[in-house]
Length: 453
Figure (cartoon, rainbow, N blue to C red):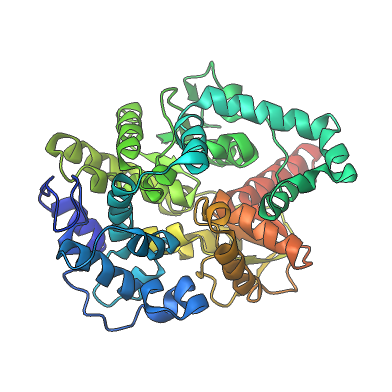
């Protein structure tokens, strides 16, 4: 158990009162900055400090600012807001910190105060309300968007928009994102809507809940299907609770902790009867493991959140811990692995995904220098802060080996961002989720058996 996990488990419920110039409930937790001695060990790990060289854009600088507001030395204003929201929340600084200071937790709590002191207005508020409140928590609306995107791709409209140049009426970074839009397929929640439990292939050894996610099930339903295939192949009955919802990570990152709590409550109740909750998106898994942080001031829900967080498991670690079937079919490929920030830094999961890949016959793993360096995705950071995200991505792509055919990872946001990097910098690598490659190996094995090879 990490120091942070121990703090979540054992920490007393915090006061709901304001603190210094934080005037609203749920202020940053002063226990989180107590061990920061501003030693500077975090500096080299920080992507924004690397790009700017500015102290306020470093982890220790942000901690100092957050602490100063609590001490009444600074106001919650734009000068405070900019460096706090410029943070990628990649958690690399916590990995680098000798005292394990939870900078990410402080950033998210500070953002919650900022959004109450300086509410969004105008177009930004409209866009925020449309997507974070009006779309992501509602699976039926997401499915409708998915259907429209599928029609856009299949009808020839996408080709026409690109060929005529109409696409360029959008901002440049959105044009780039459209270019790497994955092929939209049927969401698994729609596909399995009449099935309470997807039965294991062969003897059932375990029964697990599965978070299908919001964007994940619309844009990456093939990865969700691969996850189900791999789980059932390895003796797991898979439960997909119908009343599950968005994990709330994007809301909490944006400072909307109230909506984050509402979504967390819905998921805690939805998965109440599940012994394990399997997640294939690093950001979602990290958020769900940190639900206790959202309920520091609510004894009843804090207790429920602690129990819930113990059940959450990334697909790669779950397979590794329960003993997965090693595929026999060969997939010849040279591959490198990118550590998603919220998997490596947020959950401490590094070796398990690599072991899954190395257990596939024919896979040759090529080391990526600084594999756990942020790619610049950071939820929707690449949309809200495109210039900084682009600079971070450029740095990342400089470390991706050129002589590989695939780049594997365990987070959908990273997959989109790395696909953008491949396109932008003239690469030709295929972007894959770790569990996809394992599923493909199983499928090839079954095909060979059916042919009698």
